[in-house]
Image (tube, rainbow, N blue to C red; front, side, top):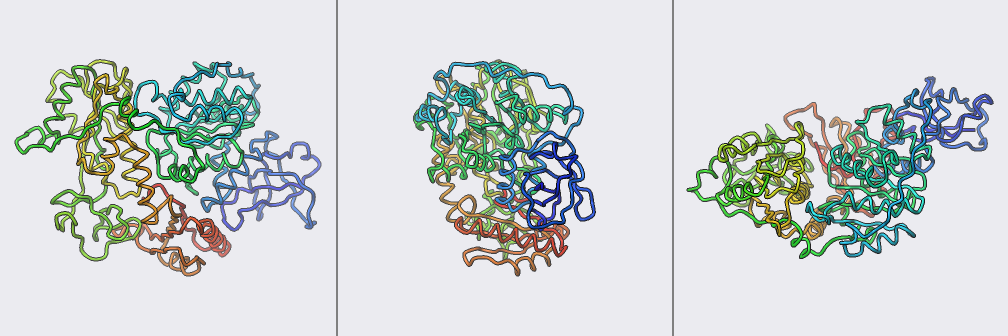
Length: 640
């Protein structure tokens, strides 16, 4: 008998089904292969999970076909897929589609070429050795299963080379004969990781799993991993499911990057998948970033992750100097035109004398939050404290719904709201005129720029799009810091600090004259964390505030979206503990009735798994009754 996970998206059918194995398929019907089965009168795809003895049922349908004798779904990955589906109130079929790439028949049948083993390299003190406690982490890699949160120095200097640190950890694991999985959030950083892996371990000694590689190359590399030809794997989001044999290390860079969040149901996050995998397979875990998210801080507080970080005094000595701008004078004409105070203009002039200068400008249209027309303070929900977004029928909170009653600014008493608009092109045009003859480079997510040579140039970039500078930038200016915080998003402050630290990481150390100027109120909590270069202290405070407000990761947050009448029925039928706070349903966008409604559930962590299970159970009941499907998200990164 064969137990098969059938590709059926219905929640009430999210379980394996038993089939008999015909004699002619017995040899090929092995665990992990793709099969075809008859299900509800239709031919369906599926994965054979295991072979087992016949049960009590005598009349079982036979397997229709073994699509390929290639076992593509390992038992470990199948278990991980099940864990992820349960954690995010989703289905096995939805998760396994990203875990196993589509079959490419020609690639599967092609002759297999031998792959070289990673070149043995001496595990010598390097980047990680500069961090207190890293020696214990490396020693434990050779004999145990350590887990650590590495707060990387934001500097282009040696101690800030996260890629080198990843390779040092991987070298220890590979020397023990185990596998390593190194993950980067986007193609740009994956390319850097790939290049340095080739230099250290040799070309062809590793596999790269990325969605933009093309179906043939992606499947070829996947098969090389599944067949055990390579033990070192690099990749982006979906590669967190890579079937690495005897996995010894999962290392993930920049867990706060929104690229780690899967955009399709059940909307899993690669950081959480990596943590689930480390727990399930007993492998080491290294989460590294310039900043620290509240989710990682929670794991550190619980003792599940060890902290690898430099003292703040050492960080400030080795990184660029960060300082706030003085208040712009009314007599400063440049500040009126280009939003740049006089001391920022002076920094640009000084920096250009030593090399390229970076100016980060928030993207136009990137900040749909509302601000007070009088004082430009962010308009916040009086119930949960999150930013308000604009609607034709008035301001609205994405967590609590439309605002009840008129809004008043707590700072100045104003009642008028507006949306701030910022643009990189306008800023580049105005500042470019102030420095005639200086090359001007613009970089956005849509129009990337290559590395900047070590000569004077003005580089204007939106957050996350700044190109590297050979030798580092001489200086950087962070424009409109307050508008970076003005997002109707739970993680707006955390994300702004992450973006700012990424800029600091591109600027030369202070001892070489590197300076970063922040154009924003110095008293803001996020700006203070940046000035002190203290992302850990900020994460501790952020986690504490999330706990007080009842937001993730200090609580479990579920959102359910769909037609308003269906959500009313869903809420009334849902069995929840008394400690769960239920809000809604309320319109997702009051100006657009077709956008549907949203119901939010906030639960203490102690009852979080029970709440998720209750939602999954009710979803299964609704699917069995053929009621309209509802969109469920667990701890969403953002709410659209």
